[in-house]
Image (cartoon, rainbow, N blue to C red; front, top):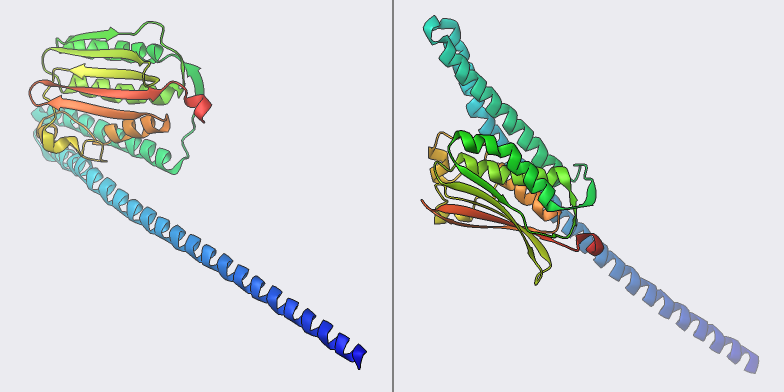
Length: 280
């Protein structure tokens, strides 16, 4: 009888332990299922956001492509049926719209590659003064033609930063090109600074151009956005240059700021961290 009681007690203990283990397994499985369900819900929300972004992007691109394509079609018809004396003027418009279309497609591809992470980057330790000087030289002739004073003021002994030369060249070219385009008189100044307090390299592009209205400041980095004054001007633009510039700057761990007054001028400031390589 004693042996039977012992066996019964042992069996009960084994059963109790097995039930306890089973409860723990179920709790663990429930927790895992809950975590996985939450992860899937978050992933689904991200996919919804990406799908909305893609739809808006396609809609924006389609809208922006419509104008130059329509103009090309109209002026081709006018060229075929119109007065031969207007041929030179029609051809000039066709060349302008073709260039506009090429720039738009190039900008869309650049922005798309950056957003999807498929753009190839070659980060190296370099001095920003070298790139700023290259951009200055590339835009000086256009400034001279418009009668603008253009100046490059480099800071001495700038520390090198970890950067992709081609991307930052493109970002600075976008800003300096805009300054030259939207400035009719006065100057365009490129300046580099070393803000040791914040451990940042600062590149400033200042002009005495038309300026940006207060209601436009918060939207100038939006894709395809052109301020009211810029849109009313005859200066061509895709509305993607500043969006691309911001994307490039943020890929370098930095930020871009703008100060502007209508009729007075605009200053863009790019701030890049000195120790980006170590941070990464």
